[in-house]
Image 1: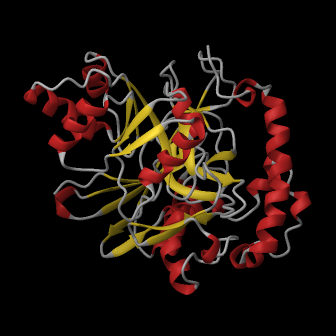
Image 2: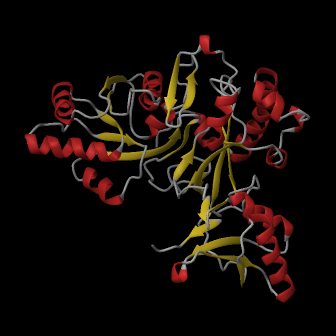
Amino acid sequence: MSFYDPLETRDPDEREADLMDKLARQVAHAKETTHYYFQSLAGVNPFDCATREALARLPLTRKRDLIELQKKHPPFGGLNSLARSKAKRVFASPGPIYELQGMDMDHWRMARVLYAAGFRHGDLIHNCFSYHFTPGAFLMEGGARKLGCAVFPGGIGQTEQQVQAMVDLKPDGYVGTPSFLRIIVEKAEEMGADISSLKKALVSGEALPGVTRNWLNERGIAVRQCYATADIGAIGYETEAEQGMVVEEELLLEIVRPGTGDPVEPGEVGEVVVTTFNPDYPLIRFATGDLSAIMPGRSPCGRSNVRLKGWMGRADQTTKIKGMFVHPEQVADIARRHPEIHRMRLVVDNPGGQDRMVLHCEIEAGGEVLDQALVSSLREVTKLRGEVAFTTPGGLPNDGKVIEDSRVY
């Protein structure tokens, strides 16, 4: 087996010690150089932040809050250490949310991901991520450059021209969404065009259905997927084992219960929270809004870092009930009031066309007194009436849902 560098196979205890050392230094750096963390981490001694327990006590920064933060403190919400004038590029993602690119060649740490997908020095990569407004294409450009690959800037659309460029240039691989790759291959077959030089692909931005992977494999294209965001860069990546996504080496990952900052037990589905060591944009406990879970054991590919199961939905399950918004944080508030409950799940349905809330609670044994106390807490926190149902520990699905909207219209 081949690895990008020795970091991928190091002892997990060595990795953890390295991450904790970096965490303390990043907290200190963020407090000293950014307006946002100077305020949000006031009173925090950075060099007390060298354990998972200390990390879990730090506040979350939620992706969904970036729009308002950036309106209050334009253009980057006060989270940037690097001045705008020193940035290599500035991007706009939907929202809009503005991001900057630092001067590092591989700002988003994608070289490792490309290597795991089979790309090597000297390859030509056909890049079909967008070059317009968003950083998608440039995530891959930086990694390709560091790996020693040339890039054709295909961008999106213009399918026939994409096919012709592939015929003429004979790229070794593709990066982009899986659906667009399939469209290109189908167009090439329709045109009778030879794009058989294409042997590998790294896809992201949407789900990769098994049927699409198999369809592309049948045409000689080995497809790997990665999980990355504009703010963070690479988070997890698929290897030849195709069993989950190995977490990228240069970040600190947690899985927390939606609506809280509390880490879940290993294997439980929760929200992906990431701390980066990027000096230009030091995100600490950045809540992505995505759901996933840690897989047990080590990857058969030989890499020793933990693995994510992949994208499993959205953590922000805010739901409107009878004209009122109910948030996962409110369910977490009820849970704090009743620590005897193992887990909670607020199920919303509409029998007879009327909205109904039922708070399902995992507990060893319920009772009328607890039932009434929970009904009261539900009313106080949400300002809505609801019912309570009890189930034994383990009776609720392990899917990260705190609020389940089962209404049928």
